[in-house]
Image (cartoon, rainbow, N blue to C red; front, side):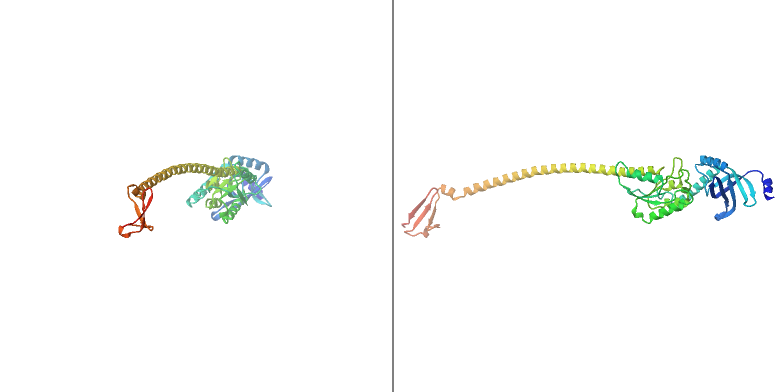
Amino acid sequence: MLDESIRQGLPDTYWVRAEIAQLTEKGHCYLELVEKAEGGMFAAKIRATCWSNTWQLIKAYFLQETGKIPETGMQVLVEVSVSYHPVYGLSLNIQNIDPHFTLGNLARQRQLTLQRLEQEGVLEMNKSLPLPAVIRRIAVISAEAAAGYGDFCHQLANNEYRLLFSTRLFPAVMQGEQAPRSIIAALNAIAAQEEDFDVVVIIRGGGSSTDLTCFDDYALAAHCAQFPLPILSGIGHTRDVSIVDIVVHMALKTPTAVAETLISHNTDELLKIQDLQRRLALVATRMVASRRQEIDKLRMMLGYAIASTCQTQRNRLQLLEQTINMHSPEQIFRKGYSLTTCNGKVVRQAAELHPGMTITSVFADSEVQSVVKN
C-alpha cells in the first residue's frame, strides 16, 4: 500500500520551510503550504494539518515569541511528518514550529521594504509636511465599530479647553489580508477631497493587538509616505512599530494618545494666541499712555505758544496805541496847535477866507468862532 510505503520510507519528522497560502482554524488547523518561484507562481503546494491539542500549544508558543499568530502570507519553518490518505492524498502533519525563523523573515522583509522606500525617496515625505497651526478638520480611517475609534472621538469631544474638532470616518478593514487594500481605498477617498481636511488619522482598536503585519505592507506604506496631508497613526502597542508608523508624520501608541496630541497641539496654539493678545494689549496700553504724554506735552507747548503769541501781539498793540496816541490830533492840540474850519471845511490857507466869513477854531479844550475883518 502507498500509505504504508510512505510511513516506512519517511518515518521521521522533517523541517519544512514554506509560506502559508491558506489557514482555517476549526478546532484543528487546516493549512495550505506553498513554495513560490520567481514571479510569484507556485513551485510547490501541499495540504497540512495541525491537530487541535498541538495547534493550541504551537499557537500560544508562536504568539509568545513573536507577538503574532500564524496567518496567511507568513513564512514559517515547521516540523512535520508525512502521511497519505487514499481519498485526500498526500499531506503533512505539523508537530512543531520555529518562531525565530518567522521573526527573522519578517525582519528581512521589513528591512527590504524600508530600503525600497528610501531608495524611491519617499521614506521621509510625509514627515516633512508641516502640521497646520490649528487642526480642526480630521479624516479618520478606522473600523467603524472599533473601541479605539469611540475612545478617540470621546477624548476630542471632552477636552478641558472646549476646543472644537470636526471628524469624518472613512471605514476600513484594520487587520488581515484585506486591510492594506481597504486602507488604501480610504486614503484615495480622502485624497479626492483633500482640501476639506487638515490631517488624516489612522487608528486601530477593538481588534487583536498582535495583528499588525498588514501595516508592514509596501503598497500601504508607500501610499502613506506620499500622502499630501500629514498622517498621524495610533495603531501600535508598547513593543510594536510598523512600517506605516515609521513613514507617517507622527506615530503614537493608541487612538487616545493621538487625540491627546491633537488637543495639545491646538492648546499650544491657543496659548500662543492668548499670549499674543496679552502682549498686544500691553503694547497698546503703553502706546496710548505714550501718546497721551505726547498730547499733554503738545498741549502745554501749544498753551505756551498761544500765551507767547498773545503777549507779543498785545505788546505790538500797545506800541501801535502809543504811536497812534503820539500822532493823534489831541496830542497836537495839547502842543498849542489848533484847527480852523469854515463852513465845515478845513482852512489851509488864509487866502481862502474873505472879510465877513465866520470861522471856527478848534483847540484842545474847546472851539472858538470868529469873524474875518480883513
